[in-house]
Structures are given as C-alpha cells and as structure tokens.
Length: 121
Image 1 (spheres, rainbow, N blue to C red):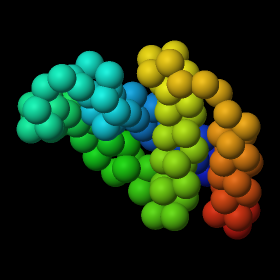
Image 2: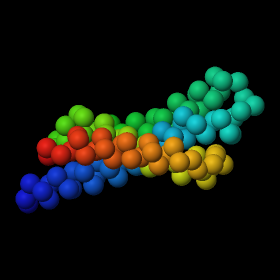
Image 3: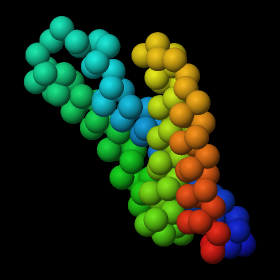
C-alpha cells in the first residue's frame, strides 16, 4: 500500500465515523428544542446524554483512527467541515429553519481553514 492509499483510507474511515457521530451529536444538542420543549430542562439533558453516548461511541474511534495519519489540527478542521455539513440539512429539514447565505459564507471560511491546515500534508 502506498502512503497516499493509507492516507485516503484513514480519512475515509475517519470521515465516515465522524459523519455518523455528528448526526447523533446534532440531535443530542438541538432536537430537544423541537421534541421536548414542554419538558423540564433536566429531562432534555438526560435524553440528550443518552443520544450523546452513541455519538461518543463513534467519535472516539474516529479520532483514534484519524490520529494515526492526521494531525490534531487536521482532525479538528475535518470535524468542523462535517459538523456544518450535517447541521445545515438538519436545521433546514428537521428544525424547519430557513437556509441563509451565512451558511455559505461560513462554509467558505471553513474551506479556507481546510486549505491552510492540509496544505503541508
């Protein structure tokens, strides 16, 4: 296996786990605003912690796999790209929020961050 093949494989596995992790994370952080709004905050917190357990069961292995090839900064930027990629459809489709140009500008800023963090790799 070439170094490039290993790098691609690590990024693919890491990104796949992080996407799944972020779906759980996004629901844990925000779905209670829609689904549990009438419940006390501590009920929402307990439900969110339960959902977050699954997030961590995917996120921890993802970071361990990623850290074999990626730097800590690269892992963080990859996480931020994935977070925004998961959050925008969640906000639009699940939370019925309008799409905003600010999401595009935020994405462009993150693309710049990706460039700077990965350019030396």
